[in-house]
Image 1 (spheres, one colour):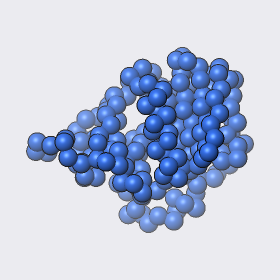
Image 2 (cartoon, one colour):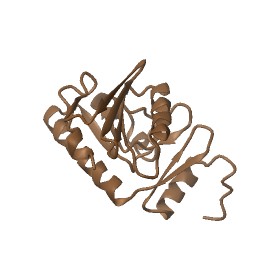
Image 3 (spheres, rainbow, N blue to C red):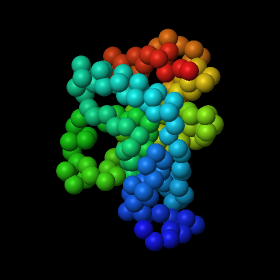
Length: 186
C-alpha cells in the first residue's frame, strides 16, 4: 500500500490492508476516523482465549448465537469499526445478514462485548470504549481487569463493579452464563 496519510480518516479498505500488513496489532477506527492501535501480547492473547473458551462452552450448550474474537471488526452505525476482545451476536440477528454482509466488517452491533485490559491500556480507556459500545446499542459490556482482579458489567443506564469475584452472572443477556472471573485474573 502506498504512503498513508494518518491525519485523515481511514477507509474500510485501508483499515483491512493495514491489519493484514501488521499481524499482531489490533487496529480499530473511532467514528471520527482516528485509529486505535493496540499490540496483542502473550498474556492478553491467553486471557482472550480463556474467555472465548468459557463463552464457547456456554454457547455450545445453549446454541443462542455466534461468538467472535478480537480479529473481528464490527462497523457501528456511527461509522466506527471496533473489535471487542470477544463478542456475542444472537443467531437470528447474524443470520439476517446476507453472506456478503457477513464478510469484511459486518454492519452489526454485537449483543454483548467483552474487553480485557492489557498493561498498555488504562481502565479509563476501556470505560470510554464501553460507553461507545453502549451508545451504539450494545446491550451488555463486560470489562475485565486481570491486574486489579476486577470485573465491571455495564448495561444501558447502569454499571456494576465486582472486586475479586469467583464468578459473575451475565443473565439475562446471556441466559445461564456465569463468567468464571478467577480464570481470567493474573
